[in-house]
Image (cartoon, rainbow, N blue to C red; front, side, top):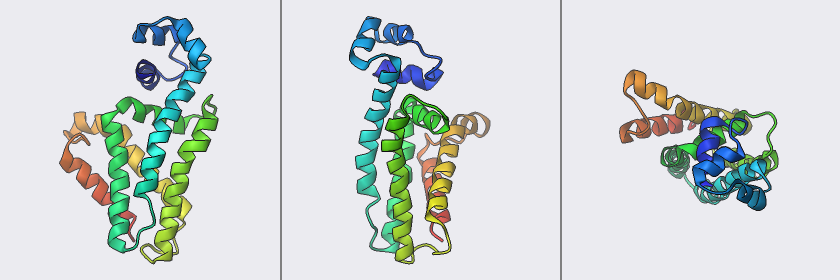
Length: 189
């Protein structure tokens, strides 16, 4: 799956063939069809693998906070974990970001059953924070979740540009800390 993730991340699903994957993995292309029922099945398997590890980790991080300080800490840990996932496995990050942008996908079911759960978890986290008066009840948790993910994915997408143009990158600990701290401040009204 590593070879497939690498190619899916760089070329997209449409720009990657079974033959490309087989060559990259140094295997017979018929193995992909046999084990994954083709390229679309392999793509779904890649997303499922990504999702299962993220879901469990997110459940642990976004448990109901008991104090404002814990709310801020958990939100920061969540942001840091998503940034770290992107840095540790850029291919995974690019596939997930690309999948958010797709209108039709052979992995739509996987995406809806798994990645939208992450979204629902952050909505619930913001709702819990409102109940405890950690954030304003005038704010819509659904909109907050959209803005949170939008702000974070924007930083991930632009990182290579910021690195070239401004010598600032999420690869640097001080830059990661700054981005995550700013996100927490923005979402702790």
